[in-house]
Image (cartoon, rainbow, N blue to C red):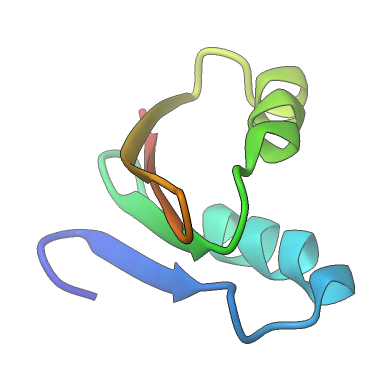
Length: 77
């Protein structure tokens, strides 16, 4: 972690483990901290899951949008 940013590289993780790990780390974040995920595809379904479960509790910002890798900052508000 640096500057309140926790980075999670999902590219080497089996797909069935990814969401559980993301939400485990999300639960550990304090308000104002950011979970940065790096993925091998657009994590749009994850965005919809956050929208359903944590509406108005996060800010979603793409840092990189493909074509090979996607990077998203998910800030806890």
